[in-house]
Image (cartoon, rainbow, N blue to C red; front, side):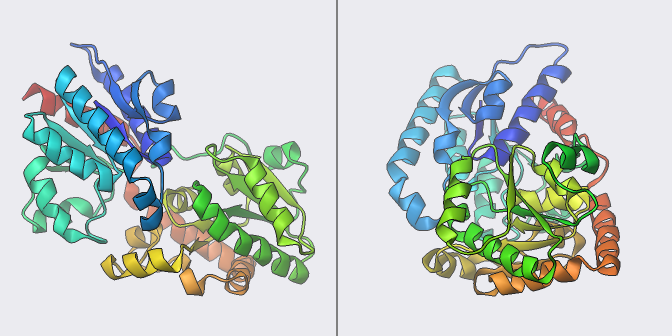
Length: 378
């Protein structure tokens, strides 16, 4: 049984499923669970469509509680009925840690892939990991030592699933030719997030920042990279609502890595995309904004110095973080224009390369599959 609750976890789970099939010489695997598009493509039977569970923000989650409760009950029922050899929970801790507790009590083996970021916030959940998870597979280099310091030893660091996997399928020249862009002029990539709520909160400031930048440098070209889960109409509506003299935007969908590879700089919504951007090597500013209610409720629970994953891995503030009140069109415009300066751009690319080297050369899905098979053979 495999349970993922949002697009990034679904993509990692799909690769894990493929690796398990590849590694299973002595047995065949059957998979079912909470799936997104990638897991469905990988042949995992859908019990719950996890596209319906990808919600951010406490008030929004509160309104969706009946949906979560229904999904929770269905997954519990199916797990009890089918009695799988293992339950693999992928990220999505608010839901999956509760499921771990419930299913472990029913005698099932619980494997957690992509550790909850307990080192960042809600550290008290470490007790749940210790009691109800049989094997924890982590993807950040410092996590195994952190858990060891909390007295938890059933942890394996398998490497980051993005390492060795993130690459563009197009050269800059090819991307520009496909999208009617001038490869000799600077390109700014704008990533507003994969959720509707993120787009409504973050995209307006990105558009306004582009307007301010264009006033300073008429040669700038702007590409909005849209997640595969979003509708281009959302972007077009936001541009129309801006009611300003905005520059022209090229909108691409499901071509985020290609856009980043072609870009000279990027504004990236905090999350997995910041790590992808770093691996590609594009200088960036990390942005995030949510409702003041969400921020007021969540900020006191966060105990790390950096929000951005690449900054946590580098153990320094490589990419500027513009969060909540610090995130304005003017602050973003100023930072991206600074990063466009040739010397600054070159220096940032070198630092990103050095930091992402800590993630290894790839193979996380294969190592995670091997660890799961070892656990099943016990």
